[in-house]
Image: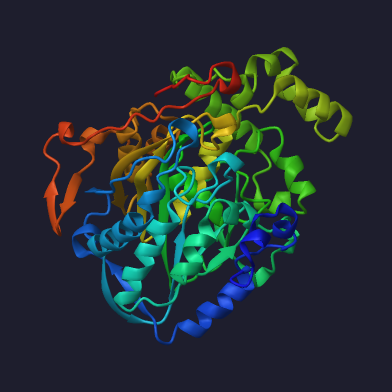
Length: 469
């Protein structure tokens, strides 16, 4: 990548000519990590944080920048060096030098799809790559020299387009491009498999290595933004990007999961519960009865359960699901049925077995509107806040509160509490400030500045719509 000219990197055809990279593949990344273990020192979480696994820690940041343009097309370009400096400072507040030699560190950013009009490294769609460079620099200074980033399923061209490599190349930070185009392209040695206890849908879930290696230190760095499926897309949803193509599409509609598994060459009976249909439908109806907010408001996002019932429901679908023509007709009628229920159950399955050593929401630059910023709906905002902790569920509850939402009403935080994974009521979550190295309790919620980041479901029909839960 370093040998490409600027001209080469902006041409889509040249970018897509790489099978997985612009960064490196999983096998090559593992090779580099294995070579680097001998001199590496695994970092440790600061003791005060480690000893409070359900607490959430807030750190204010001090980036001062103005957009180069007004509105959706503006970037905080002058923030780049400040983002790196804050990343280094924040890491020094969260991690200390360890005593164990060997191993590796994997930083999981949120580098999802970024459209052409958000093609700068300070875009609010991504976890800031410059912030991540700053984190890695501090870790290297305390002996953690064996660090790598990785993301899937979006492709390397999009990551280059969004400015990831502009930051990472200069910061000497490697990036594993895990978004192979098919599940069959992953070598068995590139994956770690975990069994999911008490799950509704999946029996087993694979993660792209080094995630899941016994000697890997996992840092989950999400960003502060919204999403049409999860409403807020923070620590829990960010873990989805550790799962390979074929298994990692958690927002697959209820009707389509079995068919997609067969299409992707995945052993459905081995890895999924055959009766997941009934399990998920039961939960969907329970959540409807419980009054989940706007649970059936968006047919585009959640399909039409009413239409499903009119067509005969499960009895009809069960008879036609293996007939491709009738299946397609049924799907067209009901839409992406129960997609939110599917996502939150699969996302929480993933989070129930994958436990990062640290969850960080980089909220220096936040994004409202939509997660993908479709049609320029969604605007970057300078929020200057970091939310961190060991429990992804509590971290996301506090992050969602800061975004202007009630985590007691958000679907996935509410179901996480149902499943015993974490608390969603900020009145029962211990929160602390970290200021100049000192950890002090948040005494009153009024101390916490909120930054309204609402969701737009209407897209072209109502570009200024912002919904809050």
